[in-house]
Image 1: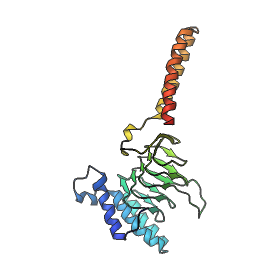
Image 2 (image 1 turned 60 degrees about the vertical axis):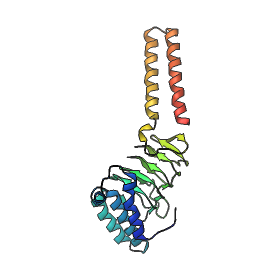
Image 3 (image 1 turned 90 degrees about the vertical axis):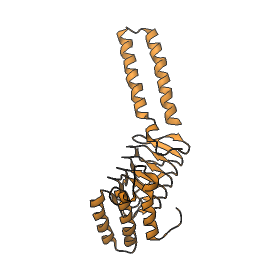
Image 4 (image 1 turned 180 degrees about the vertical axis):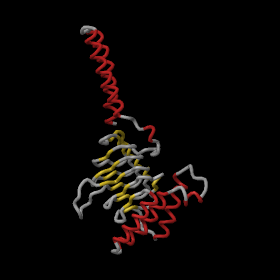
Length: 240
């Protein structure tokens, strides 16, 4: 992560992120009423310092009040870098041992969660700089989301994601390699589950047709060729 700056400089930097990342904002006044993610981060910055000074109960209490107001649950012991933007942010959960580096965009409903109850161990994810995590995504366990990576909305990530890749699905799979030119274009992420279901439905339809036509070999061969093309496209979307 980039060099440390003072608390007030960091808070000021947090307040600049909506202006840089959200085209919907029309006035700086909106920062005080329409961006709970900014306020959750400000509260976290203060609570994190208090937590590190040993006043853990006070820090937890402050973040509990913040959670009640903003509907965002950030543990004060987590590590959050600079220029992080929680867009809309309702329902975001960032666990105790999470590490969120610089220049990261997190949408609403994202969970950076743990998968075990072992105290003293790192149980939560590390999100490297430049990454984007789509709405509703669940990133679970002591795994690493690589630099400049993109996690599709509602994906469930349980293994490491390499640098400069896109991962989608349940469980998430890497479907694209190479740095994303437009990291916010989630509408362009292919739906690999949809492609697989299309293949399965057409395969069932072909088998039904074959039975009805009393094992007409010509019909079956035509359907097989069509299905093989669909399946090859599906495999290509997964391997790219």
